[in-house]
Image (cartoon, rainbow, N blue to C red; front, side):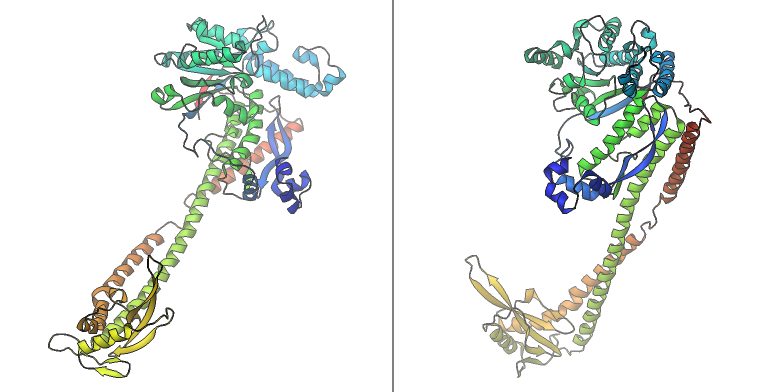
Length: 600
């Protein structure tokens, strides 16, 4: 266990000393309908749901630093997945019926094997798995003498598609990778998938020298020459296994398509294969294919392909979400679709099985995940909307208090009589002394402000102008030479404290005397218009917030999808229960289309 090796002390702090303790905290068991290796439905108990996901993701992030190509802005082509869904041949249908019986009885004669030994009986499911894997791809892998080319349509579908891409990108010398981990070329007369595909391509007109097997190039020098020829467009089709062609291959410069003849067992293998063409330096894809590489996945309905996709689904959903660190849910259900990966593996399973209930189940699960994600965003925005409305209310309250104070002080100021120059006349005092003219009043103000004062915390009353107080406070100033000085600032105080020119009083005596008048004039000229304008802006903003939809608009669709999903799950569980009791035989609807290509 990764945490056990790298974070043992952290586990001890959580009192986790064995796996069951970890599982009891972060997982839940559930019973799910799944496919067996013989494509039969059965009920299986497994760890399907992970809980406390943010904590688990945070725990994981403490020992990892995961970055995707998108995170670092890597310039590489996008993946354009295409599922090539194939119908079973008559021979495959017959073989899978036999495999179902073999899995129950262990009778080797059903699958053209001698009587099983005691050890083989213990491993009959492994034998069934291996046989089913071969039958899913090509019946000649089981017995090349008993079955002919008509017993399988997969290699023909691959050859047809490869030739289409060969012609489409012939002018650009576009290259293609073909992956298959079974039926590899052994260099003898035994049947191989590789040789069969190559022969079909040659018959279609592709020169043999342009088709190469990675297994034929064992040394580093030979492989380097092969990759140079592939990048130069001399080799147009390169076949290989995940192990040999999936890593250490820098031949991406002209890649336009990647073909998965078989389905690997892990998401990592898919990524390694696709990485041969979906990587930096793919010039042809960038210039001539819309910076995309087509990834074709070949699968036959109602075969082991369904089971393998099911296994990959159980691994892929959790891995992709736990690594990207973007989990915003408390629990994670592996049966749900991956929010950032497009078509889910669950949908693959449904498409391949041909079961319309399973297909609808997969679609509903995807819709529900999407609706829930939208609902989370909506609820977050609704909560944010409510906070913004409350903030607007608070600002309107403060705005009204200020305007009330402004109007109250302005009403008092307007009661002052005016002289022949239009200036208000009011009693002017500094300390206990009254002044009759603005000049002497200004000199007295500057005289007080020039005195040393280091009190930056408290306002000191120095005089009055009519019913308004004159108060000063020291402002600490630090020069570039780190010299500290204190500068007195003057305010006129009514219901509020007002200032003009940032509290700096002019040095000219008469202008200094007019300072209170200039301050009080600002109430009507500047402050009231500014605050009224601000009030109207806040009201408009609040109205726009209030118009936002309060209830989640897709609530009905979400509930309908959840109800329908519950109905389908109940139907599938009942079907399974009846099948176990021998009341019915499970059967699936088949699509009439053969080799159907589904863009994902």
